[in-house]
Amino acid sequence: FMCLEFSQVNNLGLRRLYDSYSFEVIPVMGQVLARDWKSYQYLVESIRQFPNQKKFAAMIRQAGFGMVTYENLTFGVSAIHSGYKLLKVVK
Image (tube, rainbow, N blue to C red):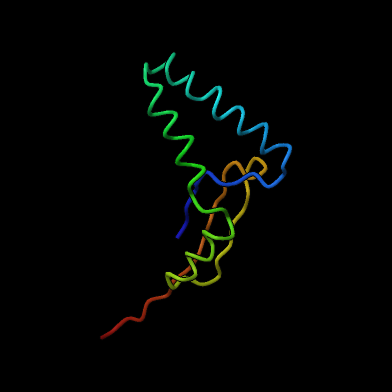
């Protein structure tokens, strides 16, 4: 299993900067480029509702995956999560 998701920026200063950008710039860009403020506002809000990296890794483990890891990209703006599940072959 591999998943690239928006995640949580851990550095408080960078998180504040990213939050300002997300809430003040992304919806405006959505309005200007796609004439759709609400969808881009929803996108920003839904990203904040997604579990942080550690919680999402725990959810993957709970689903039966092993060797679960994640790698932060761009200071945690996004992260790649991975896990492995071996299935028994029944003959």
